[in-house]
Length: 174
Length: 393
Image (tube, rainbow over all chains, first blue to last red; front, side):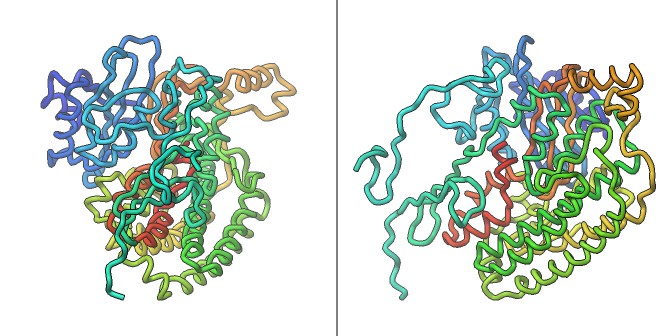
């Protein structure tokens, strides 16, 4: 669609942007180094020729067996200039931490929590890095390729909770 | 009367499945008097492992899973997924299939908006509106049953086309149904749009500015109600939307009332689209003629060895999608419905990421209601139209 985005990325960040290519259907895609992702995203949001004002989707993929095992994928859109770009960030298993982009787009908040919950990838600087869909005591990360299909979870203790009338205490207390 | 309320901070658990909130979501609200000081959301009660399930089924077997993402507008989810796979296969479907997909999607958009508008009325005390809405939705569901054989989980699209052509006389029947639906939608509008109670509870509540809506990742009617005229059907037309004439309604204040008005107008626009499709559609194929993607017709399966082989290979191994990754995005009833698809060249998806339209809106709910009254939580939660199936996957 618009080669301008990937060309500008390549020119502005020759080190941080490892590779750019045209994906299926003409999508603009770029591989970005993990450490530089927040910086690249800030440029994409703030530069008037880019103006990516929205991050509608952030997700992760588990390429089990390949050396940088995980990948975090950012889909960005500019509603004013009407173009899109897809950033792919490789995350090695030994260092499962990616800088957050929630300070750039608040919409990325739950998507990053989802990546943490399902794949175990941490986002440094995220204000509220907790599990989202699973409960806190869940062991493992269900969308990893090595999580068994018929995996079972141990029983957990009942949680402490805030009781409206009786104040904080264990749930079963009477 | 003017004395301050006993202002001890009080924590109230709403839900999961609170009668005033449609959806299995738990909202932990910290109240100061009647004002919401803080709110936290707890979701995941419906989590079915959509992505994991799809990664262990063939591409065709994923369609029933996509139906259940948004059970009120199933065909839109079908279409989104089919478009994603076709993008990866570099497949172009015949014109008639495109029109049929648009017709199914737009009828479902009307159903979705009808449900939301009437449920919003119901939860604010207007029961009659809900009955009108359900009558109108039932009429359309009857037509969809004739089209795809199922009432709720209307599974209609396939990779490479649609499942079947329209039955005899269906177009006339649907046009008549749409006329009646228009009447009923008019009744709903008449009962709500100038209703004092409805206005008081929706106008000025749950307000999101245009800047915030973009920042929070809103899409669909909620984004447009905040004043940003972004619609994927216009911005990046797919199927045959570039040949159709329709308007994008845009709101001004971004409050609950605007979101209601935008949806009311979108129903009228969808009605226009369906009628234009009926006029433009020409007879022809409804699926590609390629046995790599579409099951051969039964006489060929029973009569020729190629047909038989193609049938068995498709059923047992699934469609062989070329290796690669693609992101397809369509405008579903609540906003951008995205599928991030990774294929390793086999018959099953390697990764099927779902971008649910309700997801960022639900994430923004605590921000939207902070500082407002507890009673405002209900219309705000309604108007973002959180669908448990897609948000919790």
